[in-house]
Image 1: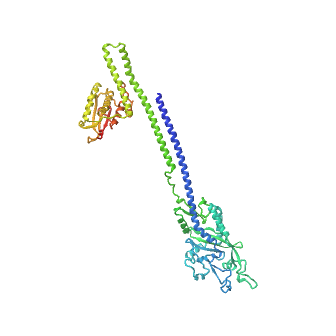
Image 2: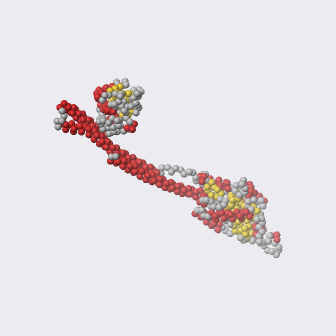
Image 3: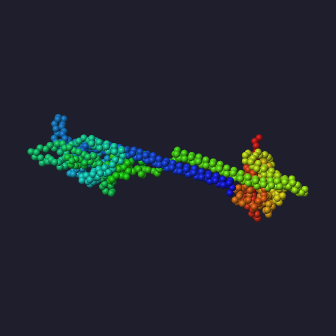
Length: 617
């Protein structure tokens, strides 16, 4: 293996290594960048999701919190339809008789939210009562109450009848204990919830102390540590208007499950204490389906497909989704769509430009390396071909001139020696002319000399010029104009003849041993209407061109390997002919279809030419 071929392989391997390093590094950079971008995008999306979640929870909590604060601060007496005031006087300053004046609850003339159903008051003796359904005080039905009040609401009465089995005094004690334990288990899910808890505690602690009299306790049926009014003897002095301190606990949310066929009611309840003893439980009931629908409607712009899930036991998986005003958590999973495509971010655009730049640079370097390698290969082939072609004529020149100079050639043979020297000089001249012509075409396009002619005239000039050469090679030149002899043609006749002459010369060289002595030069139209470009074909019936060499025969310094080894030339004939054809705006190609039977060998070259454009006047 020559050093040139070794250098070519080393250069190719070096270029391949550079490509692998560049592509590998750029691929690693791209993957890392895209991974970081996806992570950053997910982080930003998570932050936006958390911001939306906090906003949605704040909206829902604000909707319910005012109701909770209002009911947290509602006086103990308002949870009964009416109660006895401590002391009342008329305008004359005379006191009313004890029990003569009754004060009704403010609940009876209040308006509430659409999802607010009723208040309830549960004591051990009277059981479950509600100021919205005062069955124990028929006279209240004769009162002229404000329009729109919840007093006597059919929905309140129906709900109270349904909830009576669930609102047992003993059961409420257990439900409140479970609710308080659940709230402690939740813990502060966020700074926002922590502030809310502090605010609710502050509201509860700031409530003024309440009192009730013994008469109210007796009406409720509670057995106070005092004798009842009917048991009082003359010697006993009991003031039924004596005030007794009352304390209430904070509201806790409870879920009242009735059965599998009915939805759970959401209620808030608190315990009422007198002297550290629970005398009653008070609270209010909400319509959970209606409240849930209204709350979800408030956040439909943020989470159109979210859901509110009740929290009945234990902590949830993600405390950040907890509402602070209700025992429920916001399930945003149905509303979270698959992450959308990131699109063309600046980073991706930069990566694309980097890939394009790298591909362009590698392609440019590759073309440069290929050109250098091709140039080196051409130089190698040129050196080999020229040195090979020069060796024979130079050897002949040196030998013959030495013999002529030394008088070693007989007089009768001198003329033969001189003719041989003349042929070798012409061979050298053709060699130099071919190299110079190829160099001239490589560096600058030759000037064409277009002229008007006809197809027949051009073919006849070719026949006259190259028929002697064919006869000398024992070949027969057959010219077929195919009816196009009179067709005018604007082209460079000399250049066309050089192309055809090159093809005929090759046919004479490489098909000299063919049984069929013909070399056929034919003209044919490229279209059925016999207009447009003209095809000139040169066909011989020699050994043909092997398939492995057909791609290289038009390259410079490439000679056909057909078994004919004693033909002169450096492999520039077809390369020059192909360049000349392109100068004429045409194309020279090898036709792969086999010759007609019985011949199955041979080569056929086709020159397709269009008339040259007329120069403007």
